[in-house]
Image (cartoon, rainbow, N blue to C red; front, side, top):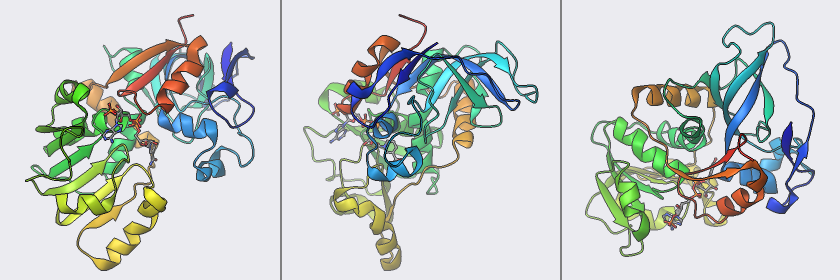
Amino acid sequence: MRAAIRTQYGGPEVLSVKEQNTPTPNKDEVLVQVHRTTVNRTDCGILRGQPFLIRFFSGLFKPSSSSPGTDFAGVIENVGNEVDRFKVGDRVFGLRDDGLASQREYMTFKASDAIEKIPEGISFNDAVASLEGAHYAYNFINKVKIDKGSQVLVNGGTGAIGSAAIQLLKNMGAQVTAVTDTDHIATVHALGPDKTVDYLKTDFTVDDIKYDFVFDAVGKSSFDPCKKLLKPNGVYISSELGPGAKNLYLPLVTKIKGGQRVIFPIPKDCKRSVKITTDLLSKGVFQPLIDTVYPMTSIQDAYTYVESGQKIGNVIIDYTST
Ligand SMILES: NC(=O)c1ccc[n+]([C@@H]2O[C@H](COP(=O)([O-])OP(=O)(O)OC[C@H]3O[C@@H](n4cnc5c(N)ncnc54)[C@H](OP(=O)(O)O)[C@@H]3O)[C@@H](O)[C@H]2O)c1
């Protein structure tokens, strides 16, 4: 089988596609023929080993896993003798945000982990693009209590996380304002927010609406300028550490002070996220945003594009095309 391989931390240039032996599943594992993975911002972080914090689970001095990859959609090729959840031929998808070495043609995965059957009628592209962004979006949302009519502003409506957050929030009955640039207003509007703001034409921190929650899904803002958007007990959540890694200590400071608060979301429970995604896809109420699909041979180009910070939604690798 072909696998994306790297032996050191670095940029897309450290990756190459090499022949490897196809793995054999243990008794509690399945063997998946990988049809698609995404290349996402978590993969880029794990590829470079940055921020350094990442190395505590991906290997301190060199990567502990030779292949990158955090998600997959594919078909079960073999099952261990203790596995009864799945059978050969099942279409499945799954996620592990600390890395599962899925960027290769075959991979093994524990059957009791974050893996589900792909709902009927959902393509491999849509299945794989529904995982990573929705997982982080869900881990923003589950840190607070969203009620019907809660006012929420999502900065970065075109990202994998932002585009998923808008849809999850609308499904929960929130009133959503999405911030994006001029070129993507129509794309973001199609995701269903109540209002869109073009950050190239307007300062999004100046708004008549007062928000219960500001979710900065691209981590381009900070708490101070967003305070004036928030209600007295409003909450600010960002996907990035922020200037001077402020978002790590502001949660404690603002909790002690009272009033407007900062929460830094530590994502956990991929299994729950994949179950929620499966449910939303089955009900037809979630449509992932897809940018480009690359063949495996162009995996370096895919990483370079994702690192540019300009992708729209999700970038996919197709392991079935040459
Ligand atoms: N905390 C965590 O555990 C965690 C996990 C995964 C990812 N992340 C972080 O989450 C962030 C988002 O990742 P992602 O994959 O969803 O998206 P992404 O690839 O970082 O975002 C791309 C989109 O953001 C838009 N954008 C860029 N600058 C913007 C700005 N100033 N205001 C509004 N939108 C802007 C870009 O479109 P335009 O420039 O055309 O508007 C582009 O469409 C990344 O910074 C990533 O490192 C954090």
